[in-house]
Image (cartoon, rainbow, N blue to C red; front, top):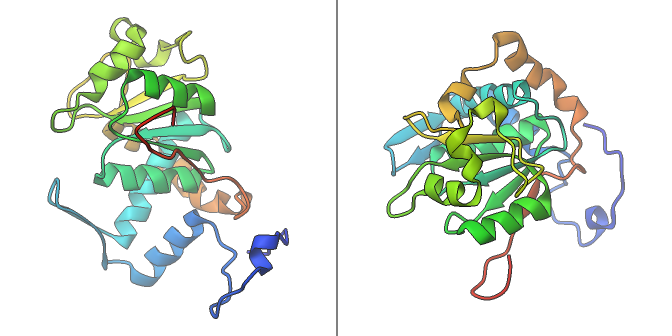
Length: 220
């Protein structure tokens, strides 16, 4: 990829290894081509292993599924879940599609979640259903009571006006939310292939992630 800018951070205190002007999405693809069937991800939580090729394949399928739901390059995608396989896949999918990931602390309660979603203008939220003692869906329903009475396609909330889509990492249907695993399978092969073809539209200088700091006082 040809560098299109010369920001000060690129030339200040250069290291011994030349800077690779690449996106995270391109790095995922390069790793899949280089290492293919080598294990890339090990999840002790759910006893799963994914190869580099499988990480790329699942990421592109999810990216295409999210685009089919109406997300576009530059949209904010909230990611509210613990350290699980789906978190990694969702992050890479977001990078491959040109979305901006908003990584949310999995211990957030309703007020903190509302603040962050509104502050960033999150358009879609991927969240866990429950994990250990945390019930993410219950917290979300306290913030967005509309979830309990609508289907996924018609969800809308005055509390978080920018949020149009909720996707739950769950093996059971939840009111108002799309199912993560169904979204992964939503797009056709042509749409999945197009994710790879569209990588040239994404620049290393594009925003990829908004990361909130954590603390014991004040807002995130």
